[in-house]
Image (cartoon, rainbow, N blue to C red; front, side, top):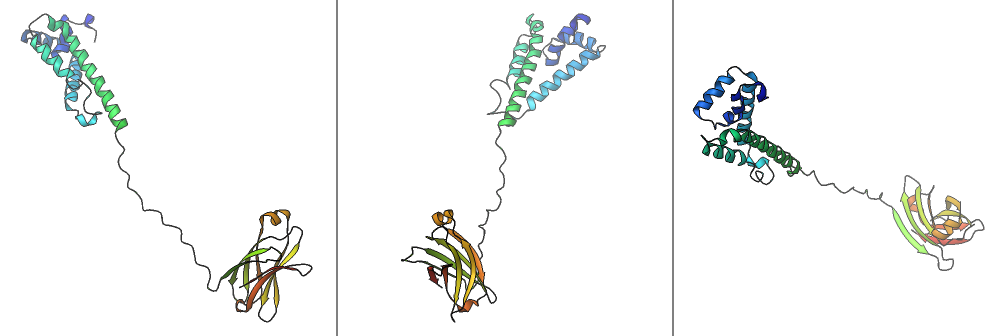
Amino acid sequence: MSTEQHDPSAGLVGAYALGVLEPAEVAEVERHLSGCASCRLEVAELRDLEVALGEVPPELLVDGPPEGGDLLLQRTLRQARRERGSEQVRRRAWLGVGAVAAAAAVLAVGLSLGRSTAPAPPVAAGPAPTATSVSPPPAGTRTASLTDPSTGARMTLTLTPAMGWVRVNAALTGIPAGEHCHLVVNGRSGAKADAGSWLVSPAGARAGTTLDGSALVDPGDVTSVSVVNEAGKTFVTVPV
């Protein structure tokens, strides 16, 4: 609102909205308001702001209302009313409007901080993850391990039965590089079945070799598993 384009009583609109004018001044402003839509709108906005400031619950602000924020408008009103009838009313009318704006700014900051720093609502915890179950080995699975004292070769063996044949898993160490070896399954009747063959690499000689093979031997007939090279040398035999 520009007071230069209005009746002089327009300068009292802010004080009128705050209710700090004398009766004669109220009548003067109301005569002006009856013909000035912009000033009526300004009075309505100021009164809405005063109501809003009084209705904000303290819990919406960080640690309660800002220091002096909720009392700023009330102190201004009380002081202006005490000075009613003096020349200071007119000088402080616009200060009252400024106080309303300042209180609104404090309110806006407090609400913003209150929302941004409020603790997050609790989140319902889901069910604790269950440990992954490990299936037991098939019935009849046999494991064994042995180191041959004469060659230094060691084999750790898992023998898993199937329908008329066996699966063999062997972890081997202590066999020299360059040896062409066979994994041999030995039966009760003296029968032998080759479960796989390999050439020992330098890395396998240093760190060991793990093999998976199979042999067409009835699981109930298996007595042992051996590692034998092409020349017939047995590096290690593990009974099962």
